[in-house]
Length: 424
Image (cartoon, rainbow, N blue to C red; front, top):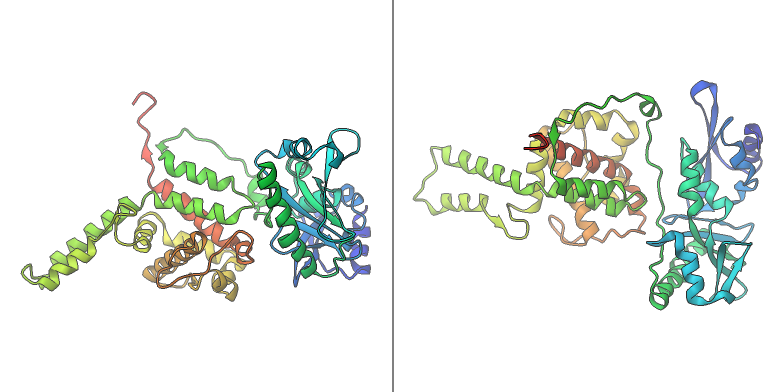
């Protein structure tokens, strides 16, 4: 399908799009397929994605479902939602062995779909290999699509599909997922002892195309880093598509160093207090000030509460000017951290114009509040609402993920030690 034909189909079917110039004079369309009251972008790139769009000629009939890796079509009365399991490659064959060959439908080998009894009269539900539309939409959501991505993850995805369920509105589609599809997954979990779960909505990471083209020279390693926080950092990097788990893993890597910096911070505060000529060792009130500073937290084996420990760690490890520059160099990022959308996730907003102490306070408090919502514990002042994987807010933390990822990297680097050699 040619680029201009794709553009015409969008115009003829009232699908909004943005057209941009790319490298080498190529043009691209950012096609806005509806998602509730929002939209999801898929990209048509002149000279690169014509074959992909040829496989999905009715792309304009489809919509996305907020909160889930799912598509639906009111015209076709069709809904498809991705699921995942620990052993995706063997999932379908395991289900056929559990539920019997009579429930399997095949197009030659291997088994492609398993029929699921439908709770909705007249509807047909199947669990199996994802459709060409689902595969290609996943691929086209990438602004810089890579062929390897298409053939690796996308071609191996497994989905639940439902036809003829009378799906006419986004709320209808969402209702089927959170009730029928979730119940099917849970039933499989319990009856077949196979862990199957719905896939939350994934957002393509921002990719600096020009930076990716730059050559990098590897130098001889000069520093070594603690393996414990590195393992949490790597775990976070592998959690793509699971933003809350990714966020918490970055937090745990930073948390590893709380003991170091809370102790240093306590020392500094006590030293400054004792230097004060007005400090009276015989005054109980003055002595209580010292005790408050060195108050020990058994839960974290550190001094002070968790928020103060986080502040001390950021203050010691992060260059604030670099962090300010990172915020202001991206208009979308700058606007986000001051926006109402950001306040839905944490009541604390961040402005690059804050003075140093206020800047650190805001960053630490925002990070800690999000952490508390993920683990559902008390926040700094009062109870906070849980932030669960399928909540709308969970899909809005892209910039918060970028922030904690940068901080985690800085903290690990700051704690690197000169390498002593292999035999040291």
